[in-house]
Length: 231
Image 1: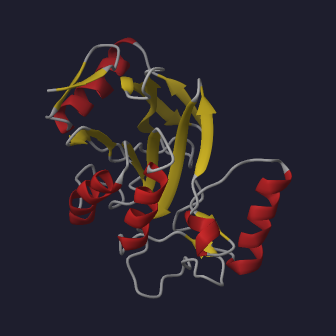
Image 2: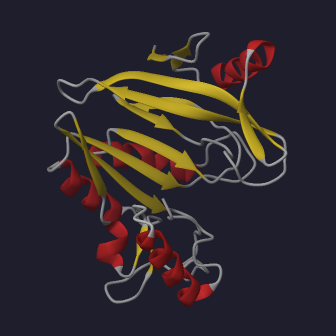
């Protein structure tokens, strides 16, 4: 995903150079593009005959004229979803053609484990529109894991590899059933970012992060190996 509030930091020329660089090495990207159609299009991959779609968008920044330019019908930029209409329409269309839809959304308030009103209000809209799994980032810290109906929502993954701070983070693993592409298993694996690298946690440190996530995530169970079930 390149849907975030820094993708356009160095202007249009550098942004287009980013797209060309990714394309040159055949790296798929979502969430930004040369126009709105390009920015909003999903990436599809097929596993065991099941079609999985990834859609990405950014709710940041929350200004009418943000520094990070939103794509239009004729100009490049990111897929903005501060107004969720376009994103919900995209999810509904993608759901018609995919067995499982992952939404990766840049949202939330930085440096707090508390959800903001946009996250709380928008998650149900995304689920209703067709997302089967919602994964969030932007706050730079872990936030709770929850369900909207039957749709899991990981509100913030934290930082996986961002800067030199020492901070808790995670890997999040999703396994699907081959028969119908429904969710088989969800797993939260505690990690630590430190000294510009990330490592899996074990023993007491692993338990510390699992207990922290349990304290945030009152509507789910997380077992000692990080496997998640809905209460």
